Image (cartoon, rainbow over all chains, first blue to last red; front, top):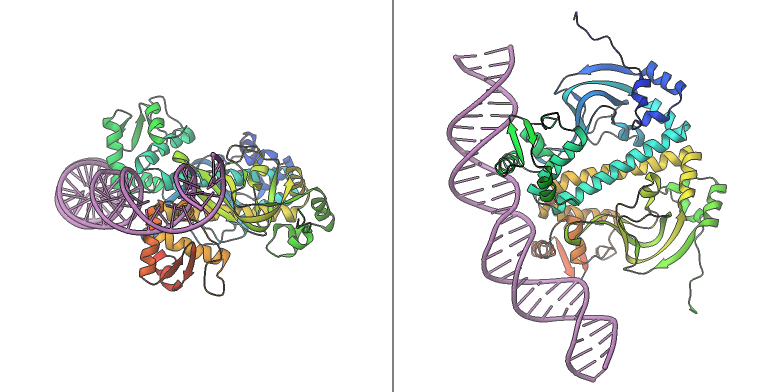
Length: 235
Length: 235
DNA sequence: CGGTACGTTGAGTCATATCAACCATAGTGG
DNA sequence: CCACTATGGTTGATATGACTCAACGTACCG
């Protein structure tokens, strides 16, 4: 406990980014969040909330990665999206005042603020700019989900896997050696693509022998992005 | 032109329903819509807007049915949802101020109001109640889309077809003879389920010989809802 | 050292897509 | 009025992508 991290990020810092929904809040409103939020660390594997549960607030991610998923047949997970620093999750349930329709689990050690529901609801009601930003965020997510419905309904597993790799590159980036910054288990990859673990393994090693990627454990090195784009059928 | 229908519905009537998002508007606001809206008839096959286009307003459906879809590989449609009386469409693009990410086409002769963008945006900014209602609507749709991703990724075509039939029953109802009130081509059914026309045909006639449904042309008669529920794997 | 979770590979199977032919219907134009 | 064309529906044959099952390898962890 000697090394315990006592640093708590001020929301002002988070709000600076011009992608954050918080950028439209007044100093006063940010103060309110700073005061009411509950900040803490979360380890890989920790569950933030589960499908069907009532949530009393939402999370704002400062560091780390969280997967948001639904549980389908026989408990098989379908990953809906990832949340990374700057993103907020669970806001949907708060706003629609329904039980959570997804679960969320930490997949890379994280730091997050938990912010009580009423704050989000109050701000949406009182701050039109913020309200619009949240609205846009929701609409954007809706667009993405609809895109994915089309993909999953029409593309082959091979095409979808290539596409997911490209999405992961976009969202999480590559390190200096061209390794994908996010690491996932084969099963997690399968649960995004919507296929079986075995199929992911086979296709990955196919991509490998075609020299599009290289594999070392869970790390994926991107060698040929153009070809992945060609395979994935995105224009 | 003798028989031209000069009846134009007042928004007050639409707003009465307690499912309409307009129920939170003031009399004054409703007057504004009444004044600015453009009401007209649309025939089956008419395209309201297409993917990628900029839209200057949104539609509120008074009568008829519209399909909202995305165009995927080789122009194959993926139907995302249907809009029926009381529903609004294209509001997503208006709010996020992005080009349309879907197309919309009339599949059952319709009457609609076209309402200019600025009205929606103004009301969202000025009327917190209305804003919340729109937010809930969006969140709800997002939840539905995410559900469908899970289904389409994990269920078989057979299961999905049964599920879609149940959804159609819920959304559009049955007439006195237990016929589904909405009629779709086999291709349209395929484009909801995310499969080929031939597969839909084969599965429908399988359901028919299993005595779950009866077919006469495009009309589908529901004989055994319980069994369809069992097949569809919904609890 | 054994346990648990993850990764890999092979073999067999099945659901579903694809291709092709054909029929029915309705609208069109000469 | 008839041929012409387009659209939708149906059925059969065939191909194959992807899943499942099963066995085994690997690595880390207490």
